[in-house]
Length: 457
Image (cartoon, rainbow, N blue to C red):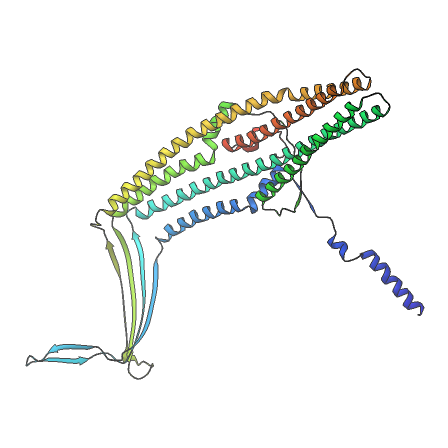
């Protein structure tokens, strides 16, 4: 093998080593998706199925506006046809003697074409009221869509906080197990030196064994919570996501009275119901106007030709006609149909008013209930940090006293359990606070303005 071949082979080996085996690409670590709660909400609103349904409802309502608007646009239709007479039409007439005579009319082939125009000129308020009703109804649907989007955001936030809660719960369980394992290891060393009894060693080992199922269960709950969040976001279950926000407390920047006022003024479902009342009133006017006349501008052009010699027409075999004029359509009596339809429209209007009143009362009650629960959680949160600090100090002292032979193993286990409970209590209260705050944001329509300094909003 010459030097050139050796150099080429060496270069090829170097390139293959740099590129690596084909399986290296397949074994590449999956891409990690870092996600704040605001990112999760945005993703759900962009590609979630529920958000798609909301957008389609809005599209339907907006299309209805176009349908009503089209009633004021001219209607133009074109008709054309060909007919071959197998037997020509006949007309009968009496002759001078009183006998009936028949004469064939027309030709073998008959060609026809026509263009018709109809333009509403004046509808006496019918189209105007119908268009107002459609526009107001579309606005009500858009507001309802905004509230549906807010509810989707609430569901995503709740799932996000649930995943954070499950993650922290698993971490606390793992930390508790580590503490028990350290204590068990320490007791084992003291037992080997004859400073502790075999009973104390067995008891510490039992405590470790009893804690391991809870660690496994919390790890499973963490996986389930993450998968539920991925489902709401429309992500594959094998997608690797890292939640970047945390459960935290931020003081509220609004009073209860202001929150109630904002809930009635800004809440999208209340605004939608209020707009629906206006739409129902316009629909009532539109329905009542259906017994009024309609004035149309009509136009028509006709072309006709007949022949018995194929399809070529001579000038004397073609006829044309056209007209333009006004026509008035007035439903003088419709069997009382419009009267009863107007009654239905009036009942729908009153129903919309009752629904608005009911929704406003429910919004006030719902918000007051959420606010009361939120105040309760805030009070319970106030002492949890101090409780954790005291529990940590108690656990540390129990370990020191145990090593000095002053405290028993039961003192260590009790202090460790108290520390774990203190951490879990604060975690649960932070989770409840975050979820209630998300509910309050939805109920008031204020969003993150409730806590300007809160992360992830």
